[in-house]
Image 1 (tube, one colour):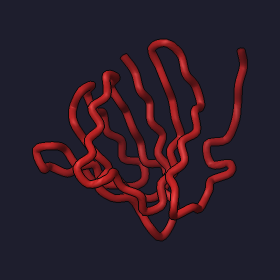
Image 2 (spheres, rainbow, N blue to C red; image 1 turned 120 degrees about the vertical axis):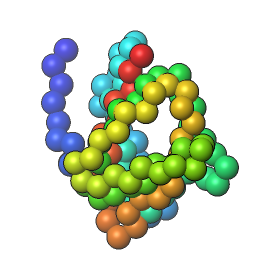
Image 3 (cartoon, helix red, strand yellow; image 1 turned 120 degrees about the horizontal axis):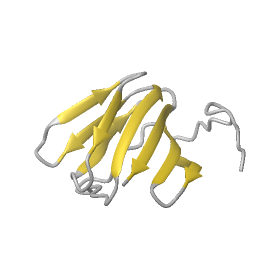
Amino acid sequence: MRAEGNIFRDIPFSPAEEETLSILSTRNLRIERIVSTGQASAEGFWYEQKENEWIVVLRGRGVIEYEDGSLTELGEGDWLHIPARLRHRVKETSSDRPTVWLAVFHR
């Protein structure tokens, strides 16, 4: 099946909520556009996914924190690969404009 779109179409500016849009999902692969505007993971919350995650910041900025306290700061064009089961959280995102992430989850 053919599909097409524009990753920047209908970018919401909603400080209250993060938005996730599923772009493609198969048994071994999931691609999502995530738009954050100042959101962060709840204090004490950690992602610990069964899948590997590759993310790139297309617009804005974000900071990923790991359980050991280390941080990775991401600006426009920066990407990061997070191995499955590595505990991490979103420490912060741009609050003055939307941060647009492209997240690819794979087995």
